[in-house]
Length: 62
Image (tube, rainbow, N blue to C red):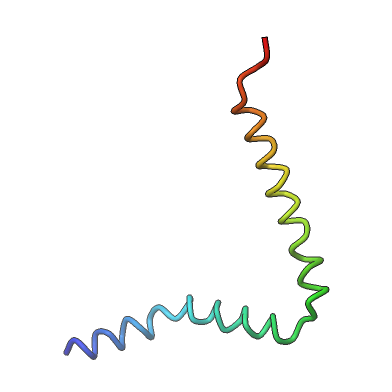
């Protein structure tokens, strides 16, 4: 019975597995340059966000 519940839960929640398989297919089919172009705005955005957070956390010079 526990195994049946496990199988039911497995088939009712396949989303993480679908996402992983889709990501792997994307990496295989798409060139690394295209992936880098897609990731570049995200990386720049996180870098700018970190700089802004550090700037806000720094005490003002007096």
